Length: 313
Image (tube, rainbow, N blue to C red; front, side, top):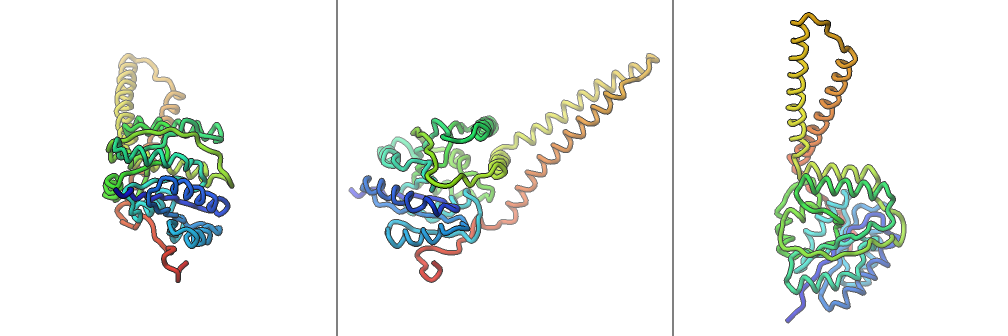
């Protein structure tokens, strides 16, 4: 009986320093599985020589294939490009910096081949050498996402094996605001966890800035929950009741002939209510912006080069 075909998707952005050693390491581990495989390198518009290195590796190793996006669309869109191109019976996503240890690949494939699950998720038991602020931000975000969406994101990562039927189900979702971790949870299917320690980066620094992580957090929350909009309605109802109580008290004092005082209280209430109104408008604006992006119908990504096109590469 022939072994199942495995596709590995590795997005890369300005990873010239580590890309060769990373691919050689992944290739060596995959050879030990005896499964036919392909390694899809997605260059997300790198500004260094990452693409040149991918072309070189594709000439050295027949399993390596490269796809270069026309600009930096973001990791989520690069993942989309890989999933669209993958031909394997199972698809595995992992990072180019090798913080997702490829030594887990044989175990992930073995568990999938046993048929106990359609998704094998690698779950972090620690976040490696990240700063305390980054760890705290990640904890708050995933806790909040879990509460709002109903999915468990504890230790979540993009390091996953997806059965072909899961990939086909995922590709049915056509939204432009992509958040892979949440979308892969939304499709359901039987899943199994495997734990790992986040390794230190072999070269360079993370390409994720604080603003980029914040943007991803906002995208994830607005794409998978309408709870912030409901919170605006609940806040409005609360202040309506509160305003009714204040109005009743004011009318009572008026008819009793008591002086109406509390200028500072009025100013404070105006500031609080105005701030909440501005926050509410901001939240609504985020959802309107997402709707605007969706209705334009632009492609998630644009491919400019592939390693199979020698004229372009």
